[in-house]
Image (cartoon, rainbow, N blue to C red):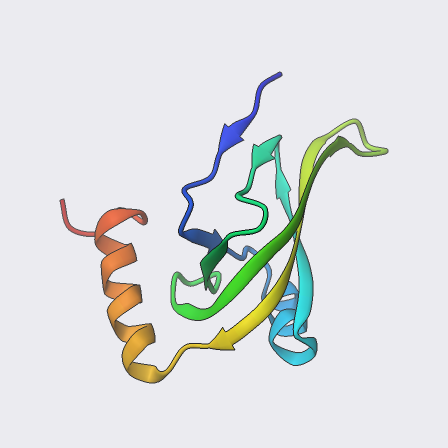
Length: 105
């Protein structure tokens, strides 16, 4: 059992529903498999499940636990700072593709 550290500028959603709730209500959470450490209190770029940069969010809580199915999970609560403009999204998406998501080497 160990913790995996998330890179400080990336918050990638695996679920369209979790991302929708964040964008619609201004607050939301996502659940990640495994114990992970998120930068609580920091602002990060949020990415859609298809690796598109969509917003700046602030991580307000990161709770690692073992759920009722005996799985290690981390719940990350966040608040929306603002949605990115089309140009910001395009640039951040291209950078993240190259740096984090395995695009060009």
